[in-house]
Amino acid sequence: MSITDSQALNTHFAISNHVEFKTNPGGLTIAEITNDHAVATVALQGGHVMTFRPREQDPVIWLSNAARFELGKSIRGGVPICWPWFGPHTTDRNKPTHGFARTVLWKVLEIKTLDDGETQIALELINTPATQAQWSYPSQLQIIITVGMELRIELITRNTGQETFSIGEALHTYFHVSDVSRIQIQGLEDCHYLDKVDNSQHKQQAGPVTIHSEVDRVYLNTRANCLIEDPGLNRRIRIAKQGSQSTVVWNPWIEKATQMGDFGDPGYLEMVCVETANALDNVVTVKPGETHRLEAVISVESL
Image (tube, rainbow, N blue to C red; front, side, top):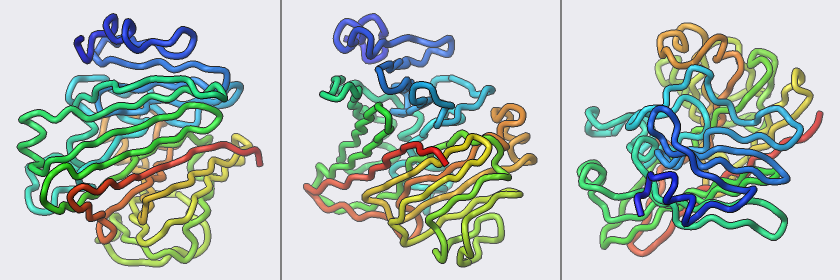
C-alpha cells in the first residue's frame, strides 16, 4: 500500500463518518476527522495537525489563509513538530531550523474511535537515508492525536540504539485569537526567559504575557499550564502539558510576517504561538531503550 495514496489509505484506515483521506492540490495527503465533538485535519507530511474546531465554536488552531501546501515545505499554521532540535542546529547551520520532522512523510499506524466518540490517529515518522544523514541515532518517533472536545497531542521518542542522545523539541502550536494585542497569556508569571528579540537576554516575566510588538521568548524550567484569555471571542484556551520544561511564546508582528509571505493579511493579529517544548537548557536526554513523551492537551472554556 502506498503511504500517500488516498484511495489505498481510505481502504485500510478510513472510518465512516469519522475519518477520510484526501489529496490537496499541492500533493499533500490530508486526514479529515469529523465526529460529534469536533472537526480537524492532519497532514501526513510532518504529522501536522492543521486545524481543530470543537462543534459550534470558533477555530482553536490557526491556519494561515495564505499557507502553502507543498511537498517538503512546512505549513504556516497548525501544529508543526520541531524535532530532533529546536531552533538552529547547534553545530551545523546548514541543517534545517527546528529539525526535519515537520517536512518529511509520516505513515499511518492506526486509526480508531474511542468509547466517548473521540477519534484517535497514530502516525510514525518514516526514517529514510535523507533523515538518517541529519540524525544518525537509531530512534523511533510517533505521534498520537486524539480529537474530541479537547485536542490531545502526544509526541513519543524512543531510543532504539545503543547510544544516549539528546533532543530539543516543540509542538509549535499556532492558536487562533480575535486580536493578539487584546489577549493575555497566564501561567508564566515570574518565569525566567530568553528574549530572542532583544539579543537573547535573560529576563523575568512580570505579570501575564501581553503582545504589542514582535515577541519571541523561550520560557525555561516551567511545567505550568498556560491560559490564553481572549475577551474578543469570550473564551479561554487552556494548554496543559506533560514531559515539557519549556514554553515558547511567539508572534512575528507586522514586519516579519510581511517578509515571510505566507501569513496572509492580517494574519499576525489573529494568531499567537504558545509552544509546548523542551528547548535550549531544557533539552531531553534519552538513554538506550528509554522512551520520552511530550504531551499537550488543548481545551476551551468560556470567560
